Structure formats: structure tokens, C-alpha cells
Image (cartoon, rainbow, N blue to C red; front, side, top):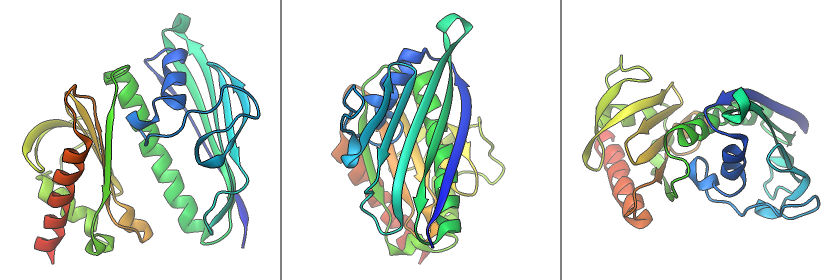
Amino acid sequence: MSKEFEIVREFEVDATPEEVWEAITHGTGAYLWPMEAPEPKVGGTAAFGSTVTAYDAPHHLVIRSDDVGIPIQSLNQLEHVIEARDGGRRAWVRYVHSGIFTDDWDNQYDGASRHTDFYLHTLREYLTHFAPRPVTFAQLDGPEASTAPGALTEVERALGLAEDAAEGARVTVRGPKEFDAVLDYRNPYFIGLRTDDALIRVFGRNHWGAPVGISVHDFAADADAEANESAWRTWLDAVYSQAS
């Protein structure tokens, strides 16, 4: 049965309103995934066939789609309100994701709400540590075995993350190759790793019946999206091959 939803988050970040605006309009690959920038006008087009219904740079952006193109959702709207703080050196952001889920409401809302927290955290990580460096983006999903209930735990073990490693800890990670990182996000649903040149995000979508996913936001000058995708896919496939 169709039912409306609304997910609201507010936060401050060490970035100017202009830097936040640039990230949410032209730099989405740095924290989310690359998307078509919205046309800078009310009525303009935006990603996935959506429409700009409010545009006041760098303070207010609303993008709406009345034809989402998936069977579980019939309306989707994203709103950003951005205000200056500390003489413009910082920004306060209000983010509202709303719409209508047409099926499996509780599961869809839970997934959307938890993903929102992770994506907005990644936005703050980008703005604080990497902006305005350009990004090379790669993403992949795990095999069918990664949909199992304990699939994210298998990734944690393969990465070499101790059970008591908390957010903010410096860790040595056993990925496609060994590297040092800050464990910038960790809960039962997601893992965030930050290196000097990249944000590596692990999505425990097995909690919602989908495969575990990985995205790599690489800010190195010589970053190679295909090499990143291939290396992490090979590694992730091996994790579940060994687990089975």
C-alpha cells in the first residue's frame, strides 16, 4: 500500500555554503555517485529525468520526480537548505528526502534512512578532507552469496578489522592490497575507510535483501576507475568464495 515518507537531517560542516553547493550540484561523485548537474533554474532538468522546483544558489535546491521508474516508489523529492555560519567559514545544512513508497514500506524506509546517514557523513568527509579535488568514481556489487545475513561480517573479517575497532581508529586494511586508513564510519550496516587519497565505502545491503556493495571515491591524480573496480570486485568475490 502506498505511503508517504520523509527523512530529515541537519548538520554543520567545515565548508563554505558555496563549497557545499558545488558538491551537491556538480560534485556528487565525490560522496554519492556521479549525476547530471541540475539546470540552474526552476523548471530545469536534473538527474534521472527529475525537475528542479527550487533553485537559489548557494542556499536552496529542490529536485522532484513524479515518475521514479521503479515499482516500489512513485514520488521522490530531495531538498537542500544551506546557511552560512561563523562568517561564512562554515555551513549549516538541512536535508530532506521525501516521497511515496508503494510497497514494502518499513524495509524501504529503514534502508533509505540508514543510507542517508552514511551518504551525508561521506559528504562531510569529502568537504573536510578532499574538496575541491576532482574524483574518480568506481562501484561494484558482490556475488549472490553477499546477500546472506552475515555477509557484511565476512567483509569486516577479510579487511582485518578488529571487533573493537571504533570510528576514528587508524587501521591496517587487508583489501586488494594492504593499506593504512582511518575507520571513519562503522556500524552493523556500513563501513567507511579514509586514506590520504580516497574514501572507500562498504554497504551492507544484505540487511535489505540486496548484495553487499563497495564504492571507491579516488582523489589521486593518477586514479583509474576500471582498475579500482576490477581490484575490489576480484577481492570481494574471493571473500565470499572462501566463506562458502
